Image (tube, rainbow, N blue to C red; front, side, top):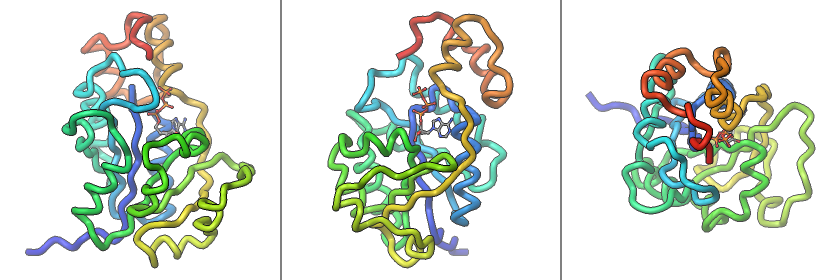
Length: 218
Ligand code: ATP
């Protein structure tokens, strides 16, 4: 039996060091908002804009798999970990586009990531392969956009279905003030991170003694 191709795929990248409810809650909300068949959570191998994470890529991937195991439509995608060199999002989109030539791809990023977008490698080419969807907090006022982005901005969600790529869209998600940096610091100080990330991930962190020394940050 032939498996139907997905009609819309979301791409949610990050260091996930470790994955937490800020990531998971927003991922779930955008999957529902946009009716995505799949939301691909893609851990990066070498973040180009920051130092290398001290915890191994295999650990970050394993934690993400534990966190997403029971969530419908969440797909953990390890393609960046298998690739040599830095993880450039544009290369990830090219490889997804080869697999899914006709499917709209939605690249999700937080407001903080969007504010640094113009420093990303070949950032304008992201729009050749995907739409960019910025997840904002309620009440967010968009800054003045350069013309390249302004002409791509749409407030019409159906435009993301009609075209496979090329649009910029802002969407509101529930803001949870959780950061992986704060979680790492908390564990290094032997404080309890419960309710900030899934219990299965906390158990993995304990079992593998991750983040227990304060030099595990980056
Ligand atoms: P760190 O604290 O190490 O910088 P982080 O928690 O910000 O990590 P990343 O893995 O770097 O997490 O982020 C991946 C994506 O998730 C980015 O697009 C970021 O904007 C978004 N994100 C991170 N934390 C939250 C949060 N609390 N709520 C919503 N989105 C988030």
